[in-house]
Image (spheres, each protein chain N blue to C red):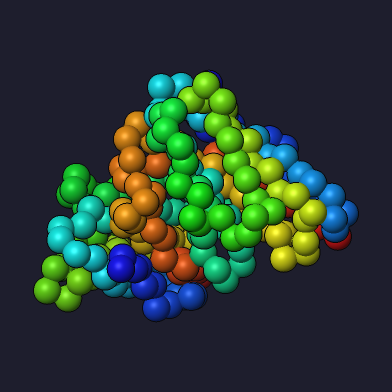
Amino acid sequence: AQRVTQPEKLLSVFKGAPVELKCNYSYSGSPELFWYVQYSRQRLQLLLRHISRESIKGFTADLNKGETSFHLKKPFAQEEDSAMYYCALPGSQGNLIFGKGTKLSVKP
Amino acid sequence: GAGVSQSPSNKVTEKGKDVELRCDPISGHTALYWYRQSLGQGLEFLIYFQGNSAPDKSGLPSDRFSAERTGGSVSTLTIQRTQQEDSAVYLCASSSQSGSGYTFGSGTRLTVV
């Protein structure tokens, strides 16, 4: 069955430090993976999808099929990156399956 | 509209009452989804509509929950005989095709007292 695991509920880093938000998945075949972000008091929004191989707000994510991971990385965290981050992949019901999320806190 | 619109934004109801939550998706988006977001539980999938097809209801947590989508556009999620454990943020999303990136609404925060 499809599953997304985000092992960290909370990740706290200082401004300027590198950040990596972990995501591991279970999926049969080649998945399309997504990262969504929810800033305080804002709606959940798409950050990036692996198929587009783009960098958004300095974040990148590489699909590692061998490790079944899709970790989100940024070399230098900013305070405005503080938010909830969700990793997601397509489910069997035509939906997206989300991880439980990681709250990123970037301290000054 | 330009985005996914949900109403009301906040709803406080007494235990045992019925509530209706509304979602107006992006025009032209054929797929519509309902999720429930609870603290520490992430996003729980509830139900999915694709065009005018019958929805997959297997994600609904109990038979007190139902949803419909009229004319392939606006959707209503109904919770009957609300319980305190129903308190959560109910999110609606739409997409141009199933399994692709979603656009989310701002949600309805339901509080059952």
